[in-house]
Length: 125
Image (cartoon, rainbow, N blue to C red; front, side, top):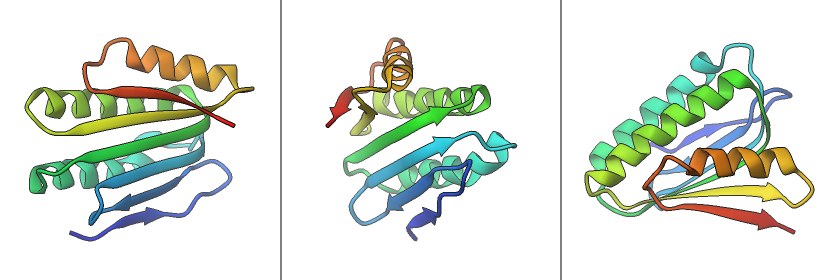
């Protein structure tokens, strides 16, 4: 399976998914005009990767700002990951936030509330 890399723009995050290591990272700001369109290849890649691999999957979300449509998409991604975790997949989600960014911290806390998948809130220096 190929890696997935999407370069960040002013309104979209960097997406860096490594098929060899199972390490996935989404980093930056996320307020695209069309969040479903931007995140579709991310969702498709994740779904295919999870179906094809039994190893550990670790996903780092380092989002410093997200709009409402991104929030809905990310919650959908988390719910899907949660379902795969509940079906035996080894998945870990890391939500990274800057200590001065209360909104990012609160977003992570809200996402984690309804999930059983391991969800780590990690404060960056």
